Length: 437
Image 1: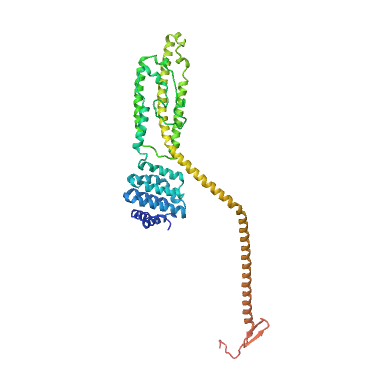
Image 2: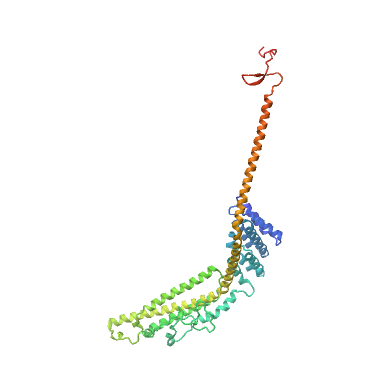
């Protein structure tokens, strides 16, 4: 009887699709889902049917189905266990987004329901905060795509490199993440204007840039291509929808920053490996080179120049990406403050509970001893009562047997004592005819 059938799933689907936005209707549908609790795979199947009905139902049924889920979650948490909580957790975020996505007028009602889960400890506060963060973009004045585009457009314009003449190309070889923005916000990773950061670099390649004008034109062409690519990439990122604030996305953000730092260190290692004599304008060793030696040195210098230009582009890209990631990280500051406040509330609750336990522990040991003593006395009294009852039962049984024996031992009319058998027997009547006659 505990095995699920297709009829059970169909009946649940039919009940959910006819849920009315009234208390009796919501409770009826929630009871139908709770019937699946003790069946193998029941909660997962019930949640799957709930989600299927939600996605195929009209928008007017979204709130009643959410209230059904709320009733099931609270009833399960309070009276049964965590099976439905574990089944609902993976699909709640996308389901809530689906509900408010097709009807933004219900976003505050949905948020109110989610807050109830946090207030009544149905889910952890971290999970509740993640759910609320996913709904923020659907509120009036929330962080929608248009707002993010407006915020990131100035950053994209500042990050795009401006074309310049070859005469000033060497002056732009110093790549930083705080070149042109006059309205830079405070840098949460150490300040954008306080001295050099990890991505600051200054390279003097004046001795190398004069070696060959033909190669310089090819490098300028590649620089223009790189600038175009960087501009298109920045514009694409400006219109990109912001990620939901969550712990996983926060860890991925910091991992991206760490990867950029590793890329920067790799580029710096290549630049620092260049022999210092290649950058010295007054080096006398070049004047003494002739023939093949001069040709070989020329090839090495050209190869070194290509490396420097390549690493310049790489480090500029790292700087731009690092700046965008830092701006993205600033979005997490209010979210982290809320999480810290939640943690403080939890710590305060635990401290109060610990104090209460300390007060209770004063009399707990004495109460435990009294309880054990009372249990011992009750057990002894029960044993004595059972022994007395057993003795009384044995006495009654003995008297009954004695009465039976006494009645059987009395001589009845027509009976005589047989000393051999030691019992009374009836006398044999010789006048009776034998049955053989």
